[in-house]
Image (cartoon, rainbow, N blue to C red; front, side, top):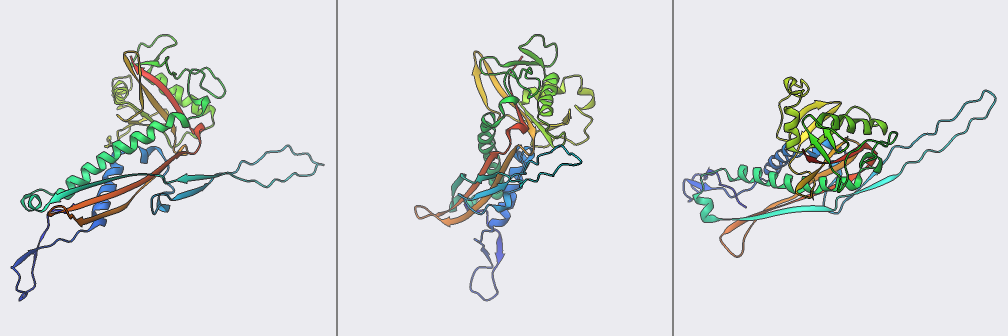
Amino acid sequence: MAFPVAATKAPAGSGTPTFAYATRFIPMIWSGKLLDKFYDSTVLAQISNTDYEGEISKFGDTVRIRTRATITINDYQADGALVYERPSSDIIDFPIDKGKYWGAVLDDVIKTQSDMNLMDMWADDAAEQLKITIDTAVLSSLPAGTATANKGQTAGRKSADIKLGVAATPLIVKKSGANGTTEKDILDLIVDMGTVLDEQNVPGTNRWLVIPVWAGGMLMKSDLRNASITGDQTSPLRNGRLGEIDRFTIYTSNLLPTAVEGANTAYHLFAGHSHALTFASQLTELETLRVESTFGTVMRGLQVYGHKVIDGTFMADAYVIKG
């Protein structure tokens, strides 16, 4: 698309009117605006690591990730020979195999009559639509990537007795007053998800938790409400950040995967560490061109992205309904 064009003064003696309309388009400025707005809206940039994003140049790229080797610890004997190993680590291929594009036409007549800053309007809307589409796709892939010991009715690598809900038997989550094996207080659920990660030796730093908006409302009405959840002085951002509880930075989202359970909607709640998920996205194409079929300009863009659960033991999945 073309944007409202700025009036520029024509060179003296050129024989042109005093002011001429410039038709130049500066894609890098628009690209930066869109990406800034995109990351301000999404939770993915907050819960994943984006270490490999700078290595993307086009759709179809593959980034090779070297994982950390595990060193064997041996018993020492004063008169014994030392045993050495050659540590090796797995190579994980991270494909940038997904893309979303948009394209729209602005007729010259409409462009001339418009008195609005269409560039900012399109940047806002494109960022929001990208957020909805890409967040939904990535979050929907997380249940399959979560380690078996970190979900279901026997979660916990050591305890194997933490109930996080399962298909046909979701947990009923309440603000308070939960009672029985199928019900759980929202704060108790958060603590249990933290315990599941603790049993996998997941570091206590850089932990996150993504919950539905209604569960965030329960937290705001819970016993922590007078402390603004955690006493965190940072105001919530557009990415839904609420604060911190039990080493988790809490985010809310309307885009978590759901399923129908009888008359109820069941939700997946995810807890994890930034090491669990890798995500990368780039706006690789942005261009404008004149349309052959009408008097107007088309603007189109291509956003490529990829995501991969690097280590499912660093993530927990609860399956719940609102009580």
